[in-house]
Length: 115
Length: 112
Image (cartoon, rainbow over all chains, first blue to last red):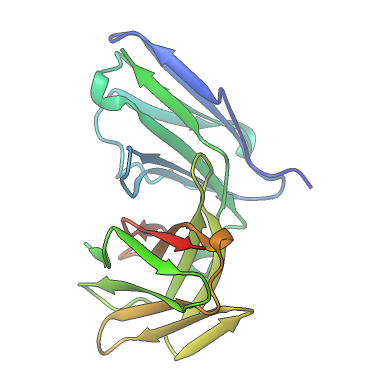
């Protein structure tokens, strides 16, 4: 079946512009995660959605970052007034929502470059 | 919060040898620990999960151990192949058990 998809695969933007990154999780997965990975670095947690519960936004680095998940499926990560330090690969993952024993399925990521 | 360290940023070994990667955590001992593989330009792929009451878990050429006393997990790849070259990440649930904390990863290169 289809895995997690993300779009666009690459995004180049100018400093100060807003960007929207999209994630289509695996059908039936109730949990959805956003991570950020800078060059040569590990995964930095950003936000976590689980079913209809309030999202865990504890990893968002600033109020310029926000995310939505509509209808318990597709999610959009929005970065307002982008800065050069926002340049990174943004990864989305989904899972069945079983907690720590979950297997996360990752998308290919969106590479964001802020000029 | 949980902090995770993984041995040497990069590890080079000869084909056919056993690669051993370490994952050390500093805070509470989690009930589960996971290992993922990440290839360049791709998202991580789940490999193995080990529970705190399992000392060892195997899957084909992979073996994972979990020592809650040492706060350490070891990840072994036996009879390594160049195709095993990738970055390997360990992941633990966070304090609340709802989310995951990933280690920085170890980049493994298996030389032919």
